Length: 153
Image 1 (cartoon, rainbow, N blue to C red):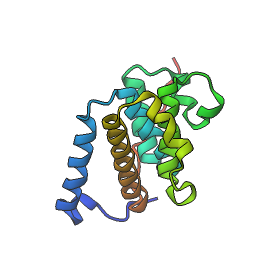
Image 2: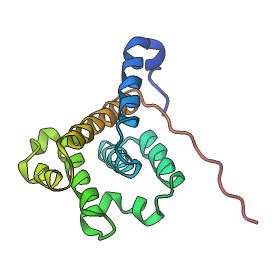
Image 3: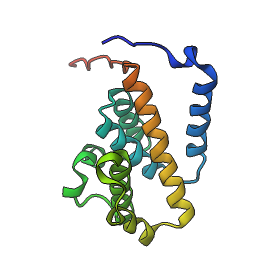
Image 4: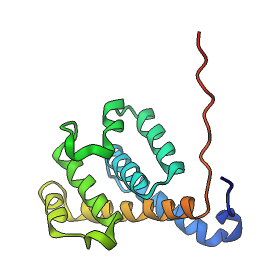
């Protein structure tokens, strides 16, 4: 697979706007583990290898356990996620699959139990931001870096 084009070169102003949105999300005050969940789950749903690779590595680097990372795609079947994390995962799925779900009340209600309106707004913006990145990376076939294989001792 080869990249179709470099959006940063093709449309630098538009690309800078996406970077500014991403910076806003990073500076939102949302806990890192919440942002990791949003970014990883949306990227899995969207089939974005570039972003899945990046966000798994970031989650691992910030101390999230392998089990916590590995079970994100099967979160509904796992007890490792807190009520807050489960609410975020449900809302991430609902908004990422918006044409199918229409963002139902059943996925919004759990957020109201554990987050403020400000946090819910920031979570929703974070979901939108990673979906923008996924569409850029998948649409332009951005290849993820390939790690060097581990060598046997």
